[in-house]
Image 1 (cartoon, rainbow, N blue to C red):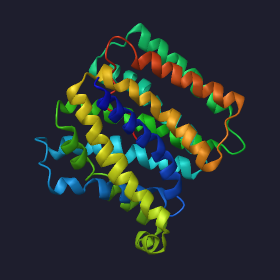
Image 2: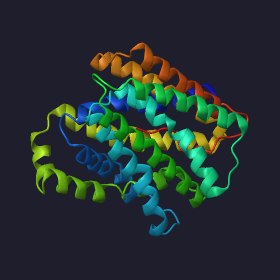
Image 3: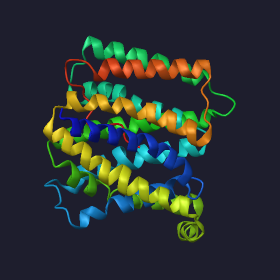
Length: 293
């Protein structure tokens, strides 16, 4: 890769890692479904000027519901219920191993021995993280967050079935899907007028968080990532995604004083080691997108 493209790949990883901190800040002002509504309402704005992908809504809606709505609703609920942002950034990356399993079941892809090994190592790390539940890590937060990579992986498989498409345009049009179900969930849980009230009362930090998640972490980051994937192979670009949990953990530690005990650190290390085995395999992995946040 050219040096400037390496810089762009690292920049995207930093954006996605820091976005876990932005999420925690945003959740101080908005409920999880409200923050999802705002994030993707902003992220969908480019759809006003970008051409629609030549795909039916019957194909786009399931992808938008799983890849975006499901992934982030559960991720945000998990963080709101006590999942530390830095730890969440690691758990969400397990979408890679779930994608391998779902692609094998739905698409008939045959995982390599190296991918199975990496998955086993990552799962053992998840088990250690699960054993560290207690104290500041609530079981509900951990389980809710764990649903996020599962939904992400389902979305990955559905996305692969769509075939090749311009990433920037596709992401913008997929962003049209989450706001309505997220808003409906907010109205059911928070009340019909809760979002307008939250917007009028939100501090500047909460509003900036929603704007950052929509414009920077979604529109800009996916546009850059898509451009890199069009220029280079998936196997070349995807390893940079391994920086996301590192940035997420470091930024959360700096912002909120998040600390990781020995058991949790061991679990995180195993998850990252397993993902490295999967992503750095000679054969291109089944992961379609980078870990997003």
